[in-house]
Amino acid sequence: MPIQVTTRRLRVENVVGDVMRQVNVARDIDLPVYARSIESVDTEIRKKEYKVIDNKVIVELTVHRQVYYVEAVTCDVQEMTLPDEKITEFVHVDGVCPDDDVTVKLKADIEYCDVDCVDMPDDCGCHKKFQQTAIIQLRVKVLEMVDLPVITSVSGDGVTPTYEKVAVNHVVAAGSQQYNLSDSFIEMPCDTKKIKCIDADIRDVETKLIPDKVIVKGVLHKQIYYVLQRTGEVKETHADVPFSVFVHLDGVDTDSNVRADVDIEYIDSELVERGDGKFVKETVILKVNARATEHIVLNVATSVKGARTENLSLRTENLIGSACRQVNIVEDIAMPVPARKVSWVESELRNLAGEVLPNKVIVKGVLEKHIFYVADCDDQVKEICVQEPFTEFIHIDGAQKDDVVEVKARVEHVNVEAIHDMPTCNWRQTAVIEVCGIVTETVNINVVTNVFELPAPAPATATATPAGQGTQNAPQTAACAPGTATLYVVKKGDTLYKIAKAGGTSLNAILRANPSLRNPNAIKAGDVIQLPCPEGNG
Image (tube, rainbow, N blue to C red; front, side, top):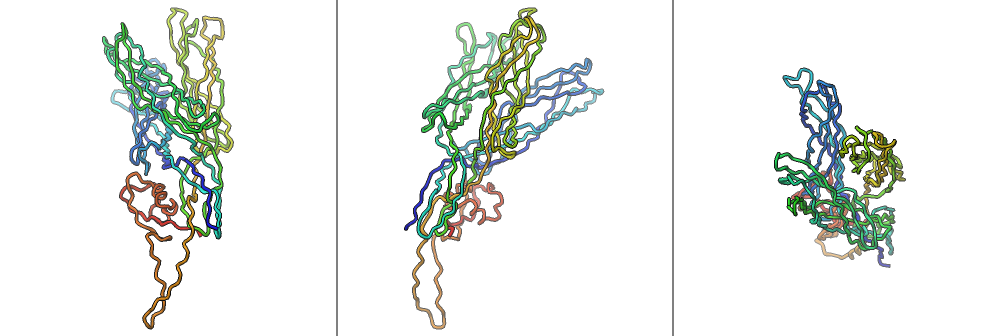
């Protein structure tokens, strides 16, 4: 009976590279007055962006710092907020290149932070200049979408397949959509001369599934820096613009697992006059990428004895589990002066970080609230900023310490009420937040993608030989005989996985044929490697 196979095509994300890098950052801090010491420096990474180029990922971080220092004369603790600083670094990832099918997962954490005084000639025991040293841990994981044909059944005379159970996240559907926010007008003071710059980021992304579509909702948060006409001062205001975009995904339903990423592709602003007022007219283009996955477990063929096979080897992410949890945060707040009412509250989550423990994910962060209240003494609207650190856990079965976690959180509800009769300084805040964790692990998959009959042995032929010489078998000649290898010149954009797929062999076979190639990602255009010819496992 000829060989018969059953094939299933999977679409998975192959891990092109997973690189960690430490970045040392040293910055001077110049205080307006002499200080006895720095009490603390609150440092946080508020924005993370990246750009993929050939063999590299450019990472741009926006770092926010608040300095608390002990003033030399009064010994009072003072606060100074430094301008946000952008730090640009690159992470080398061999084989990566710009592509629509490439996804980058970027994680940046501040691992260490310290401050030392800088001695100057006139300091006399107190200082104005200090130096802050921080160590930032970067982790960049690059994934590419690949179609993987796997064989789930092999039968035929003289063949013995070996099967192995594999678990993968199969991409059911993927799509993208551009969205234009050009109709946004934000009112500015009448004395505004020009717009200096705008910083923007995406917050509170949510997804809702309907048949064959995913609706992606979120908020575009903008900080607008503008120049006043009379004084030349630079002021700041901010605005939140909600958006809702749908992406077509064939085959998804309300039970699908969907991930959506929103990137700001373009932003521009123009100061315009409308009637008696001045407004910022903005053009913002968002790109929304969405993909639906299902976690499947299959028995796939990993070798076939008695046949020639083509194999593929790749690394992919396996979903361990995901879960969300609602958390109530209750905190008493002391206003600096008696307030007769709270007008409104603006809240956001900062410094989210996750840590994996056995069967759990620890989520840490800070709930920052800006409370706007009416002072009883003069009816003036005032503002107080309150930061509340929180630590919560999410139960995820199967999670282990070395797994990778992605955490998300959003504020669902915030309320501030008076504890005593108004006006009063004593208020109580109640917040409801949702924290979510997604735990994944990287697994290696080596599967059979094609099976061929072994060639029939060539019939023996008699040949005349000169007297005194024995009969010898002629050597087999072929363009690429099993067990041999050919030379291959690496081209721009090649990865070992792509070379193996095109050559009908496996990544492990290439590594065995090139023992000097210790790092599978360390190839570049122009390199010459040994490419093994396809061969059976029998």
